[in-house]
Length: 182
Image 1 (cartoon, rainbow, N blue to C red):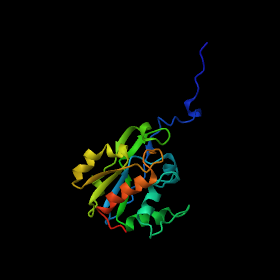
Image 2: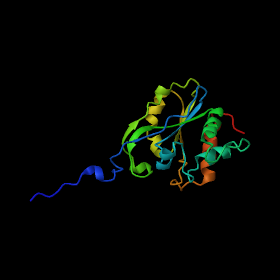
Image 3: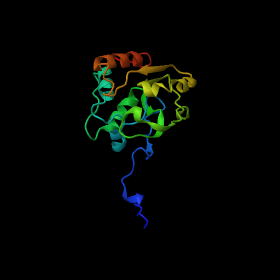
């Protein structure tokens, strides 16, 4: 007698075999400093927003650098936060366009496909800053764009070896080299 075969369509999808797609860049013709992460977290993908996890310190760090310019917060403020970034000459994207990953850790990224960063054609681009080590692994590629390339401490809460104050100071130092900060 033959054993029955389970129809695989009845099984939940295996997250390690699903290809995840990143978010579109937040850039404009006046982007001076492009901040590159590795790949959006599961929450960021689900919400369609960069740095959506409340424990990620990305938005807090930027607010600390520009304390006199309130950063729009709240559930319906993402478009305003994006405009806030662009008004300061910042842009945001990730080094990976697609990958397989279970969870949100960079160490779980598999089969990654790199974004075409040169294809952005940003006329005012003066520098690139990599948000964390996984992103910085691609610095050899971003250096070919002919602008300074910096490594920032990761804004992720998983990067706990550097305090918020340490991160904010390092980010301020890099950003101040390319943009006016108070």
